Image 1 (cartoon, rainbow, N blue to C red):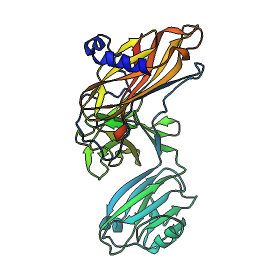
Image 2 (tube, rainbow, N blue to C red):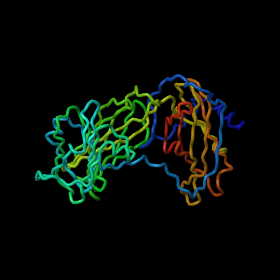
Image 3 (cartoon, rainbow, N blue to C red):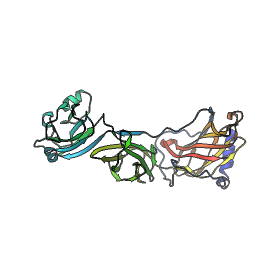
Image 4 (cartoon, one colour):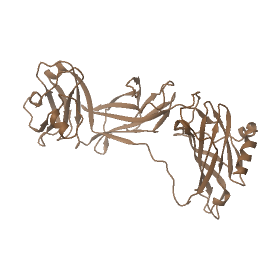
Length: 390
């Protein structure tokens, strides 16, 4: 520990030397702040003593970061006004067993099961497998608003066009939710990261499939929605082979810690609609790597200068890859280091310890999955998949 602290002190006194050895260029999927914000110190007591530790890895174990959650939607939501509901709302379904829920918004007239009807494309009444009132739904454990009705189509009514009506003297607005649990029409959405820096972009990859094939002629729109409900514009860009990407700019003023943001997507093809919501955390960038480093290759010790715009306890993590006897790079050790930094430059040191290097492994080395975290605000600030080679 003493040698680590001495090395950090020497490195901190020589930022120009560190800048002479730049970190590797960023790659796709890396998270790198381009600006910093000054935030007050959160309330509470925080550990300020520095810590530095490492442990060996089995080089035969492959390491991989978990992929962000991939959502699959067989449902959609639609807002309808009472006069439209009385005249009839057209639905295009893709399978049997569809569940349709009608919920009154605040101030709208409550509905009763007897007031909701469904007819097919030939204007014939559709046989329902079940219909439930709000009392029945609550008894089953569902948290629904007063006047909510859920209907389920019988198995002999499958794909096709239908019309849902509630011919009553109702007023107000209603939320229509259509869920097809047995449908093979699926909207898949996967964010490229489960977090985003305020002032950066968030991207979600999309496909609308029918069975194993991507649906042609898909129309899609998207919205970025803040935890408080405010929405911001988003774009949907067409990719190759029918794939799409929804992209939105996260406002620089977005505050962390107020809940998850959502990128909401609305897609349709051949009249079949699907909606998806992908949630992610927003982070305020309080610090970043300075861009350079110093390394003691003999001791496998690396010093990383940090630019901190806000006081706090910051942590750096990294995985050391060494060259195996077969000349491939394998993971051999991980190291963590944390220290208190004020609003200025500081240095964090990763000490991998040569004793953790397996026999027969050596240079060249790489440090991968290099991360910088703000421990006081529980925020992962920077991530570089490949950071250093020496």
